[in-house]
Amino acid sequence: MKKKNVYDKIKDEEKKMQEENKVKKSPDIKAMFSQRVLAFLIDLVLLSIICSLITMFVPVNDTATKLYEEQNRVLEGYVDGSVSMEEYVNQMVDLGYDISRQTVIVSIVTIVISLLYYVVYPCYNNGQTLGKKLMKIKIKKTNDTELSMNDLLIRSMINNSILVNIINVILVLFLSKNLYLSTSSLVSFIQYLVLIISLIMIAFTKNAQGLHDKVCKTEVVVADTVKEDVLCTSEN
Image 1 (tube, rainbow, N blue to C red):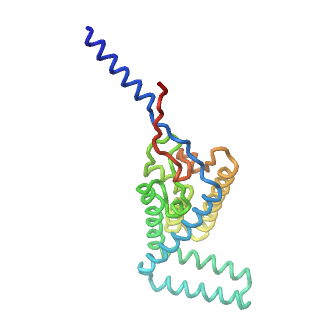
Image 2: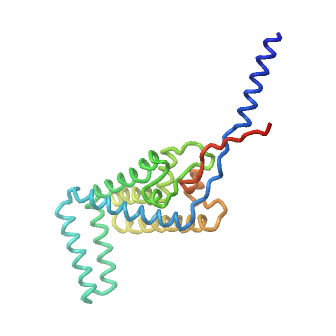
């Protein structure tokens, strides 16, 4: 009985020491609004370049090539004054629809690249896209649990227009031109509205979370915040 008590006492002392020497982490520093905006813009530019380079190798049929040429002619006509503003808008809208129908494969490839860039890459790169890495910020869960691919998927669907692009591909395949144009415009308007609301929330709310952050329970913080273990020594 005496040995048991000694053993228990030792275990209690060890447990007490572990609690006293518990790891303490410095609080996360929220990313500045300017950092997030710049990272967003950098990502847009980089993704556009990547998509352009890759889709160059995606075969485009002759019809699409002729439509692009016609689009350039309309633009030149508007610049030199031979095409009025109203004619320019109407023709460009019609040509845009026709090009969208002829380049569905390019759109699908672009969506896949976007998913790889905004979902897969940051999932294996500490919650950072290239833009966020350059700005030294990262995405993390508010409750400090592991950031999952599902979190990043839902987040990018809302924030990076991936959902809108998917919807537009489906619409252009199955709807008539007029219905497609009106529905696509509505979807795009909703996307812009979401972005504007998110920007306002990030800029003016205490937790600096956009709609996408609220839905996924994520936040954007400074990536190089000191998070090293700090040993708390107890006074004797």
